[in-house]
Image 1 (spheres, rainbow, N blue to C red):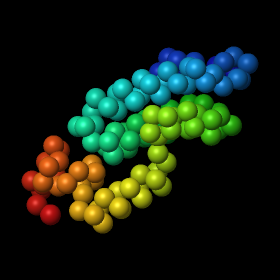
Image 2: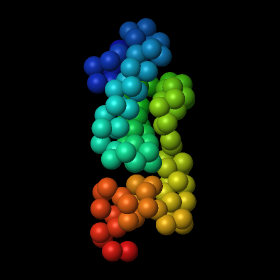
Image 3: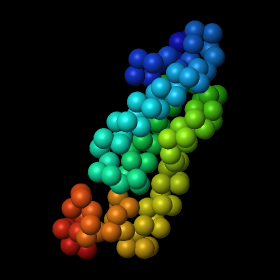
Image 4: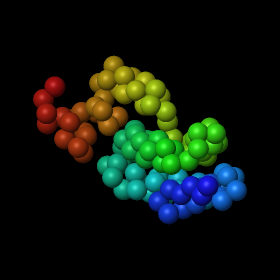
Length: 113
């Protein structure tokens, strides 16, 4: 059983989780998420976490906790944590990207609330 994510082997042929390789996966996904986040940390976390959740589907469930722990170094958040942040943002007048509507580079303030 050799499990790979984006061509990086995260579980070796003996079924051992490769922490170093998984960190490489996380770094690659963090870089991709950062490039498309519009400098919104919340949007970065949402994008990065979605990519990690998708990548977790390619490795055995027994390694998910360890993989998520490594991903937290790059600000991985669970779906529940993201929803909690989005609710807090909405309650405090911030858009879905975690930015004041009138300042959001994604144009949230232009949509008329």
